[in-house]
Length: 104
Image (cartoon, rainbow, N blue to C red):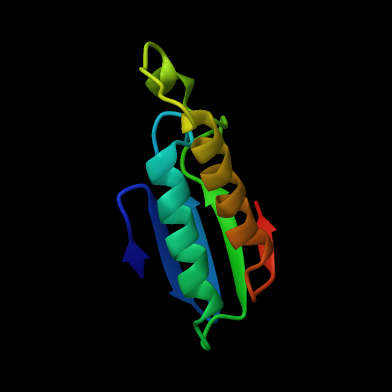
């Protein structure tokens, strides 16, 4: 098992269960994206993992972008592009994982 602040990963019987744990609705922000990339890049390199299951803690899988953190936030030139690039790279880390990924 390994855990970042928001994402935790438990490995048993060659199955990596990746849990998004960002209460109350597993909202996604910069930290979420960075941790998700780290976890899936790590899983890709693990020989003892054959499949990954992505799930959300609580009642909601993920509500999507954390809009509460964005309200009233000062934005500079290029910030939106950087955010979109990070989000895209996060999802690419899941899609390009060398193990099959099941969202449940």
